Image (cartoon, rainbow, N blue to C red):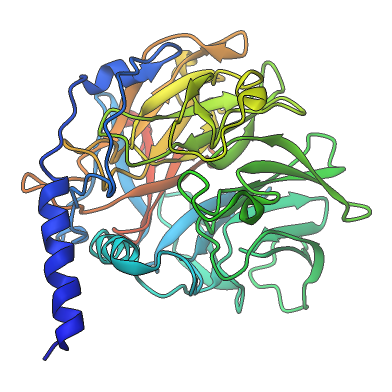
Length: 444
């Protein structure tokens, strides 16, 4: 039996949910992509549109749908909420099996309770396994026949990087360093803390992604905001909504770029050698706003959050306003559709795919829970030329939503394996999918 107060909360939450579902997108989703997306007037809403795709997992024998000319198969299944991937020099694939840590002060009240209920139905409520698992495909058939616990007893790990024999992990509150030797299937020596990362009792966006600099002297960590649009106070946003630069030798860190609400997937574009990220933008101003995006990030650059979006479009909800910062806000390079929850990014440098894929970007779109109709739930490809996006997005992996609107899977991290195949972490399907040209599905 619910207590009276619990029942009242439930009734209020259901009423708010039903009310929130009445709002719908007015702009076709295609207009929310590209360097100049359509940005209609915001719609005022105390609670975001709620349009949950209930997580079910994949029925036996089913899998995502690959684009024409491509095949998809499971490199591994039966994982525990796999989120990010990293390929070691010998071809072993590391998978961060992870989820949010306890966040006791995040999302108080009815609104917070509704949000937690929604995320639970969407598959984001499972406890964190707090480990990194190694997958090895020793015979080159596209399936990992060997699996071992590479690292365990971590704290919501997400980002991974390797510099020489030093393996780095971005936990939710710190970067740790471990000694690694090529061929190791398990690390047993304790880690050394390199630098702290923003965590704490709110820790609203808990994921901390990671990439090493091209010369191996620095690490770049992505840190999401502690709120939607600063409602927890700007003091709670110190070193957040940012890319942090960490000096490996000293552990000293600084803000490299800021105003990025929830950046992830840091990756180096091969032609320009610029650092790029994908960014989840803000909620509660309608199904059409604001497009997520990918962008190159400049040293010292400010990208608007929370005061403005997509350049100098002011968010009137933020108090106090900062017109001085809005004037500096850099327009992102390429929109990825509103509420698509774009979380994974990798640039293609392999030889397995056709030449048209060279240097372009694969993006893992985790999928909306607050857009009507739903968006994302797929992996896309954006072609690049001379270091910049040069065309429309192409669907590469779809079918994550069933005909009934249930989430059979949700793609997150993406990377390229040693043979040039695309790998995709699916945290609802609990699998790592491997995409290849159709005639080369088992090629090594």
